[in-house]
Image (cartoon, rainbow, N blue to C red; front, top):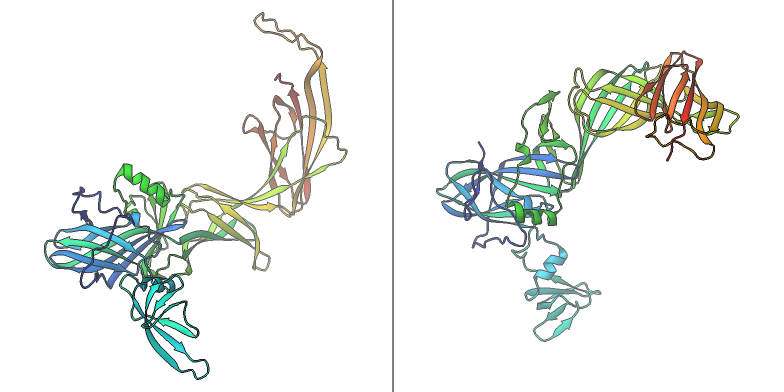
Length: 512
């Protein structure tokens, strides 16, 4: 069982773990020989990637002496968020606690090296441009503003012509790579295994679906690929890789610091929050993570800095699919004034249910790249569509754009408005209209003709948005009322033929 490393000075209870890091509050304790680096031998990394950040759990072997130890964790992400870092004791024979820890990202560069030598001795090497002979002189870099160099016999502002500054060594304050240092205490000497967990920016992942429809558009092969990018500035060798699907709330650093004042030093190991309902398909597991889903790859992988990799999360064959066609239209409440028919766009959709062999698991949001087999069996690209996060047994509906073989046209064949005075109500408690003549109702008849150029029959769903006060007085196909203003008709069209939907509507004038 993983044990929490207590912050010894505060006596935090077990389970609430560790130390909240503030970059301005933590200063590494200097030791004569510098910190002892945690061993890279036996290192294991668990990397959980969210939409735009990652959680790194870096576990290493550490040899601790009795008492206090100054330990360094090198080769960590330069984009580590210090406020989120904490240590846990994976394995040790004696109690272990942390008194202080700090994140140092003061990396060496030409400018940082130059600035760190202010007030120190440097060597100025001058090259004769004609003979290429060099001369070496010692000087003190009084100030980097200029710079100002103090030689034995003079002071110069600026670097002499054909000269360069040479430094004697790398200052201990500069690092080749970022490191987290911690003062760790134990009651007896012995080996320990410690895990450093932290949030880091620079990560990202996305899901891409490859759908290959058969020629009849009744089955499809579906692959779900995860593309991960490592821009954190660190390498993660032989890491176990996980992806989290969902919009996870991630507070910016200033907001996190403000919240910590109220909530206390609380950190959470995201990799340990998985509870139940584990789904395993092709070696990849999916587990619920609070209101999100965690996808774990079956085999470790090495993710290098600035590297982009792609992995298969799901591969399902012969998934049942169905092709549907839809027309959307708003029924007019006035004379459209057109003698001819107006074309209407017919949208094509491909849908499936998330169930069956190799499916029935939560699907991440992403882009579906859709191909369809032609008569020779070659997959041709037919479009792309986005898919939202879909729970198991949920329905997926992909918009492929307007159909080329199924078309629709609309024309208003009848329009009539009736004016007059409303009939007085027999009830004395109802105020009746007593003003001048006004519009009472409008009668219209609409015809929507759907044509099918395919060699197989199709069904087209016609959705019509109705005005306030509507009522259907006649129709050639039975409608379905979906809401107070939305009506749907399903029109069956034979191959190489057309079918007309004709309906009449009375819109009663409503007093405002």
